Image (cartoon, rainbow, N blue to C red; front, top):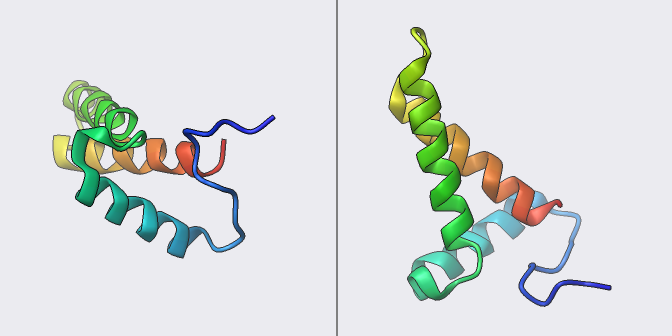
Length: 74
Protein backbone atom coordinates (compact mmCIF):
# COMPACT_ATOMS: atom_id res chain seq x y z
CA UNK A 1 0.00 0.00 0.00
CA UNK A 2 1.41 3.38 -0.95
CA UNK A 3 1.23 6.47 1.22
CA UNK A 4 -0.58 9.33 -0.61
CA UNK A 5 1.63 11.90 1.17
CA UNK A 6 4.81 10.35 -0.25
CA UNK A 7 6.02 11.33 -3.72
CA UNK A 8 5.93 8.56 -6.35
CA UNK A 9 9.10 6.46 -6.73
CA UNK A 10 11.05 7.03 -9.95
CA UNK A 11 14.52 6.11 -11.12
CA UNK A 12 16.05 9.59 -11.52
CA UNK A 13 16.80 10.82 -7.99
CA UNK A 14 18.16 14.21 -9.05
CA UNK A 15 15.13 15.26 -11.12
CA UNK A 16 12.82 13.86 -8.47
CA UNK A 17 14.59 15.90 -5.77
CA UNK A 18 14.37 19.00 -7.95
CA UNK A 19 10.64 18.58 -8.40
CA UNK A 20 10.19 17.99 -4.67
CA UNK A 21 12.18 21.14 -3.81
CA UNK A 22 10.16 23.17 -6.32
CA UNK A 23 6.95 21.86 -4.76
CA UNK A 24 8.19 22.76 -1.30
CA UNK A 25 9.10 26.27 -2.51
CA UNK A 26 5.67 26.81 -4.10
CA UNK A 27 3.50 25.32 -1.37
CA UNK A 28 5.59 26.29 1.65
CA UNK A 29 4.55 24.68 4.92
CA UNK A 30 1.52 23.06 3.24
CA UNK A 31 3.75 20.66 1.28
CA UNK A 32 4.06 17.26 3.03
CA UNK A 33 7.88 17.22 2.74
CA UNK A 34 8.57 20.67 4.19
CA UNK A 35 8.22 19.89 7.89
CA UNK A 36 10.36 16.71 7.89
CA UNK A 37 13.10 18.41 5.87
CA UNK A 38 13.14 21.45 8.16
CA UNK A 39 13.24 19.17 11.20
CA UNK A 40 16.18 17.28 9.69
CA UNK A 41 17.96 20.58 9.03
CA UNK A 42 17.47 21.68 12.63
CA UNK A 43 18.66 18.36 14.05
CA UNK A 44 21.69 18.40 11.75
CA UNK A 45 22.60 21.94 12.81
CA UNK A 46 22.28 21.05 16.50
CA UNK A 47 24.33 17.89 16.09
CA UNK A 48 27.03 19.83 14.23
CA UNK A 49 27.13 22.33 17.07
CA UNK A 50 28.17 19.52 19.40
CA UNK A 51 30.93 18.27 17.13
CA UNK A 52 34.24 20.15 17.20
CA UNK A 53 35.11 19.73 13.50
CA UNK A 54 31.77 20.22 11.71
CA UNK A 55 30.19 23.68 11.57
CA UNK A 56 26.45 24.25 11.88
CA UNK A 57 25.85 25.17 8.19
CA UNK A 58 27.33 21.85 7.10
CA UNK A 59 25.15 20.03 9.62
CA UNK A 60 22.09 21.97 8.48
CA UNK A 61 22.62 21.04 4.82
CA UNK A 62 23.47 17.43 5.69
CA UNK A 63 20.38 17.04 7.89
CA UNK A 64 18.07 18.58 5.29
CA UNK A 65 19.62 16.49 2.53
CA UNK A 66 19.26 13.29 4.52
CA UNK A 67 15.61 13.90 5.29
CA UNK A 68 14.86 14.83 1.67
CA UNK A 69 16.52 11.60 0.57
CA UNK A 70 14.49 9.60 3.12
CA UNK A 71 11.29 11.24 1.79
CA UNK A 72 12.18 10.25 -1.76
CA UNK A 73 13.60 6.78 -0.99
CA UNK A 74 11.96 5.40 2.17
